[in-house]
Image (cartoon, rainbow, N blue to C red; front, side, top):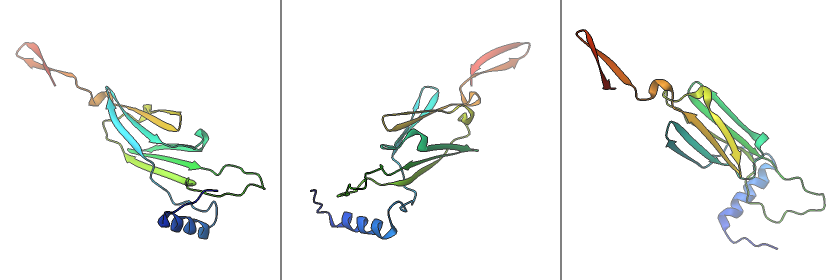
Length: 143
């Protein structure tokens, strides 16, 4: 048998019991990392214990929304739960994407409990050369 000594965790457990099993659906923040890798931004979300079909990714204008649902594991009738610390329910995260990102070509990959989104930088936002007309000739400068 496992014993828990943290009184605050006990209060959380009691609050969950009062709301009923499976009804704890308050959206919760999921941890993430975001970084630029060459010509794309990479955003990685930790979603351990979430099935790939329980993840929903939406983009509306520049708002990226990731929702995931961790469902309870089916248990036999004779199994008695002794300790439950892994949260169940819906988790969500919204990120405002810059106008310089190409939201039409986002790639998503899910492996080992990590959802990785790769968002390319839009062509219009990449550095380019600007041609300047001087008299009858043109000169290339960095833009």
